[in-house]
Image 1 (spheres, one colour):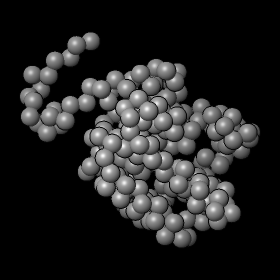
Image 2: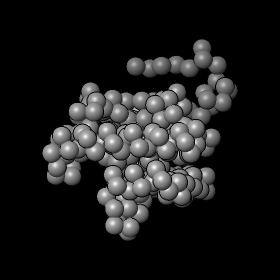
Image 3: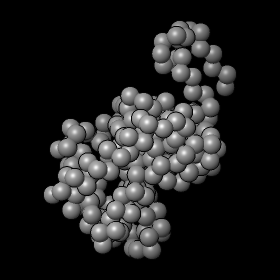
Image 4: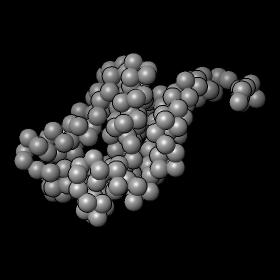
Length: 192
């Protein structure tokens, strides 16, 4: 099984991806971890590295190529990155998008990174603008287009346990034959 978990900074991607990977015995591959490692190796903060990537498309292309190769070449993985759903679009069993209001995401980032909410909000704004620009320029991807995802969840609306339960239920209910058109809609029984 190949699951993807995507969403903006502070949306709960990493937390929820780790829980799903453990629950379904999947290898967890984090694009954010790989990106942060690359930034650290070169002496940049993630925000600075994002902005550097605006002028050096090889940074994104190398990271994205690596993530796509993993998605295509391995089984039983959970791929977590902003573009995971796009990179694995033709191969993923389920594509999940997580989000939350910007102020909620900024509070989470501020708490996680021990900085002010105002600073986290500004850095997040800059980072998202930078990434949206690059994704559009490099791949013609509109990161705001959520139509490729099987499920989108506002993680600011429910607590962590409720979100994790929703996501686990979604994965457990996944039936590949429905997607392939083998089971007529009228034959699908919803037992709530």
